[in-house]
Length: 252
Image (tube, rainbow, N blue to C red; front, side, top):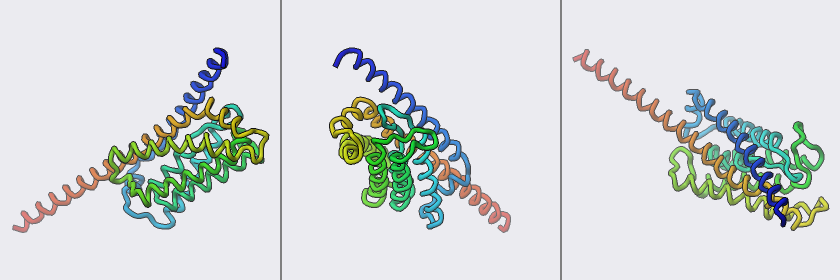
């Protein structure tokens, strides 16, 4: 590998990292803005959600997964984004059904890249099936974390947060170094090692870092929302206690 190739790869890495970081900045800002709503804080703080609310969450996170596909960016014929992070986060936040539903919606949409390029022209062909399967798998990972690892964003600790980020980052390695290279030869002219090399030289490192970082940020936002809601409840209970105490004094 000569210096020209090294510089080219490094340039591609910087471009992909910058664009992915810009995308997650938009998503995180959106989440933070809606978290300022009292209604959203009440919804996030609920211990259990109805079936109708879970369907709403599946559609919401599924749409975000589709949005991530549409507004990812092409690099060497593939598309880099944070779709897997969204599916995993949905499972941890909403529970197994939400995670699996989100993964299916976002993953199946990603697979349509074998027929068309998407509304924004950013669906990659040779990675379509592999990436779609990886996103479906990400939804099951989020479900597994919620059901069997008992990760709950309402009472999660720092160690669990880093574990979630680590698992999310590791899944990107499985996604790009095993699933995509194994599936691509089944319907494209790329060999396993060609697909492996393209993924490792271009999007692997940015995808690992950004997806792991993204789920950390989203989890911190939810924790902050829960803390604010707990403060609101504590303040309301204090006011109610003071009112009750004042009424008792007046009766005495």
